Image 1 (tube, rainbow over the protein chains, first blue to last red):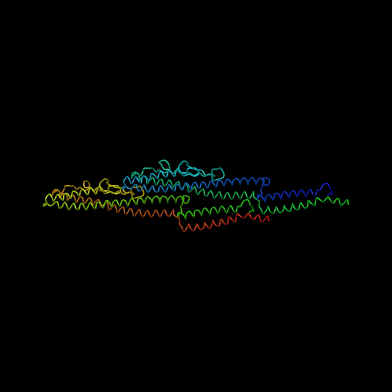
Image 2 (tube, rainbow over the protein chains, first blue to last red):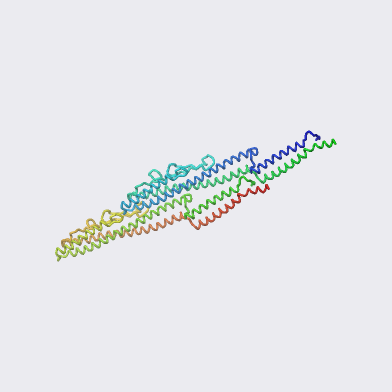
Length: 277
Length: 275
């Protein structure tokens, strides 16, 4: 290589390498300070897209978990209301059995009949006031309720739970009629009606219990999916500190060495002066 | 596994397991505090349905037991009234036999006849006032009474008891004024035997029905105990088992909490690399 003064090739080469080292050191600092390996699309465009998709899905999963918990709460609310109705129906059975006794005079039978009728009204009141999040659950106004327990929009991401009407009346859920205890014959038919009503409530409760357990399983699965998706996003986006600190140290040394070499390269053309002495 | 800071997978796994343990501990606490294994339909829907049915039936059985006891009381009331009527008829037989004596003058016979007629009125008064729960038992208003002594509505759940009329005009054929003559007094002696037989017939029905109701009551009591036991086996918590599970869950929650705290600090390792 010829010895020239105006152009310091060695210095240019040193500057170029120092610039590269500095840029890599900058990347290392960014990764270590942010904790992310992928800080911009320039770092890993495909990885960033996958990681962002996973991040978006984990937030949808969190919403699905809240939905599932709400569903379990709704089932619990329905179940406890149905439990109260069961207790009332038990008492009504006791009243019907008592009123079926032939030795009663009409006044005493009337006392049983009054309580029976009032309990029917109470069942209806409970049925009309049992709601979750503003949705009436057991008055028959909705025949089913759809829970969104996934993070897609397919049919597998929803769960429809049928809601039985637990109101009294000839056409709706519980065929219990007021005034039936006025006669012995009526009281005897009341016994049958009470058994049938109890079965209807038990049918409804088995749906609540089964749905609640199913939602619980779905929730467990969502939790596992949530953990897995976060792990997947982490593997793409997050910085491995063991690796990144090693690279950082290497880049630090490269910059120090580069700076030192550049300083020496800048003084190389001074050799020409020694020829003029 | 790479050493990362932004996502703590170990902590997420620990959180998930802790959440499961917490939920199981909640179930244990609910079971131990309520005493019930089945607290909601989610615990055991089929079992709950069976238990609720049994509970409803035990309450119907309780009503049936009260009904049966009422029936026994009604029989006892009728029997004691009939016993009084029997005593009266005995006295009437004594009066008729006395009045049948030819040596009596009409005044003395009149004394016997007066008492005889007053006793007839007393029999009718007793028959009209004997009632149980508002139902007249021996005046012929009702020819039978139906006891509901079961907890279903079939014919086997009811028991119809025939009620005889113990009034003098219908049931007992005793007429006032019969002792005015010797002939009348002699006829009355026959009427009295027939009336006594009618009352005894009625009392045998009361006694038999009462004993039958007693047997039905015993059976209801046994059924009641069995149904309660059946409900208990389904619904109640076995404390020996549940306390063991509770202790296990308690340890799981404590261990999970401790591990979670440690998992949360794992990423601090990264700092040591930067020193």
